[in-house]
Amino acid sequence: MKKITITLTLILIILFATFAFLYCNLLANHNLKSYSIYKISYNIDIKNKLGKSTGLFMLLPRIKTIKPQQKIYDLSINKNYNLISNPDKSGSYLITFENLKPGREEKIQINFKAKIYHAEQKLISKNLTNHPGAQYLKSEPDIEADSPLIKNMAVELTKNENNDYYKLLKLYDFTREKLIYEENKNCATALEVLKSRKAQCADSVLLLMALCRSINIPAEFCAGIFYNNEDGTFTKTHSWAKVFIKNYGWLYIDPTLGRFNPESRFYCLAEVRDKYIALWESGRMPFTFYLSNPNTDKNKIEIKTEYKISKLKEKKLPWFENFIKKGTDAFFYGGG
Image 1 (cartoon, rainbow, N blue to C red):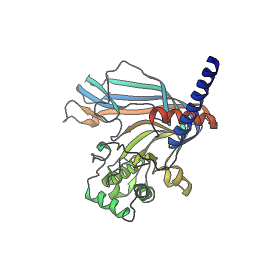
Image 2 (image 1 turned 90 degrees about the vertical axis):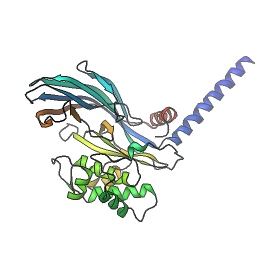
Image 3 (image 1 turned 180 degrees about the horizontal axis):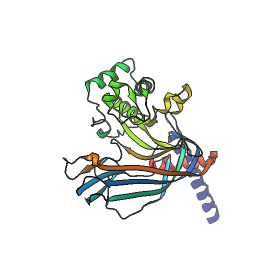
Image 4 (image 1 turned 90 degrees about the horizontal axis):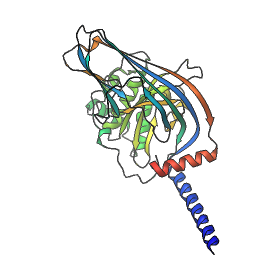
C-alpha cells in the first residue's frame, strides 16, 4: 500500500510539473531560437587636461542579466573602485574620483561573458495590469516629450489609430523612414533630430522615445554592442529602444537597423537577435559625467571608450531546451 501511495504521489507531482510548464510556456511571450556566448572587455580611459585637480562623478553601465534574452556572468572590474549601485534609479553605477589630479589618467576595465538568446516576442494579448512607472513617460533633457512640436507630430502620425501597438508602428515607421542616417554625426536631442531630420542610431531612439512618451506610451533607452560580423569587422556600439504596450509588455524595437529593407522592418520590431549585447537600459544616456565645480570646462576631461569582443560559442536551441527555459523564466520572472 505504501509503494502505491508513493507511486501515485510521484505521478501527481510529474503531472503537476508538466501542467505548470505547459501553462508557463503559454504565459511566456517569446520563442527562443538560438544563443551565442561572447567574451567582452569594456575599457573606459579618463584623463584630466584641466591643469588643476577636480572631483569627477560618472555614471557607468550596470551590466546585468535581462530575462529572457541575456545572461551575464564572470563580471569583474580591474580596480577596487567606489561604486554606488543605481543612485538615481537609472539602472547605473556611480563611480567617484574625489581628487582627479591634472594629467592623471584612470583606466577602467570591465570584463564579462554574455549568453545572448535570439528571442522572438509573441504578440499575444495578456491581462497585464502592471504599468512600468511614470519614469518611462517623463520628459528629460535629451527626450523632450513635453515639446509641443513633438507632441503635435506624434498626435498627427497616430490620429487614425486607437490601439497603442498600431500607434507604435506609425511612430516606428516615421523614425525608420523619414530620417537621414548619418553614422558619424554628434548626438542630438530628440527635438533637434525632429527639426533636422538627420540622425545616427542614438538620435533615432531618442526621437522615437520622445514621440512615444508624448502620447503616454512608456519607452526606455537601450545601448550596447551589436555583433554584426563573425570576424567582428562591423561590430559597433549601438542603440535601440524598449517600448511598453499594454497587454503585450515590453517590445524591443530598432529604428536604425529597421530602415534598410522591407524584411528588416519586421525583424527589428519585437525580435531580439543574439547579436544585441545590452550594456545599458535606462532613460539616460550612458557615460554621463559631472564635475565637482559645475563651472569647470567639461571639454578638458578626455573620455575614451573601447571594447574587445569575441564569440565563444553559437548554438541553435532544441525545442525541449526552449520549452524548459521558457517555462522556467515565466515561472520565476513572469511572462516577459
